[in-house]
Length: 111
Image (cartoon, rainbow, N blue to C red; front, side):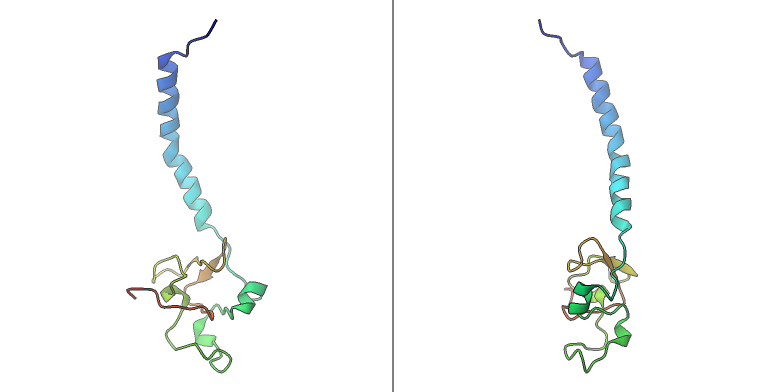
């Protein structure tokens, strides 16, 4: 003998599940926003020549560096140009400072 699932129970469950979606989305956004900053001493950061402040780049050691280049204007930077920090494609799970720079810098289109 099969038990039937009451339609009212199904509708209530769907409504409660749908009501919880905005709350779950907020937790996901908070988790994405709370990424740690890349440490300049990190091996990957060191191999890419990452510095947290582009004004302190040693031009002699980084011939591709041009004044005015910074992470916020790089194609790899996931934030807006005005953001103080943001995610970078080169450092998954970590943020870089918008004022930083590395050897992989490439001009973000439209900037």
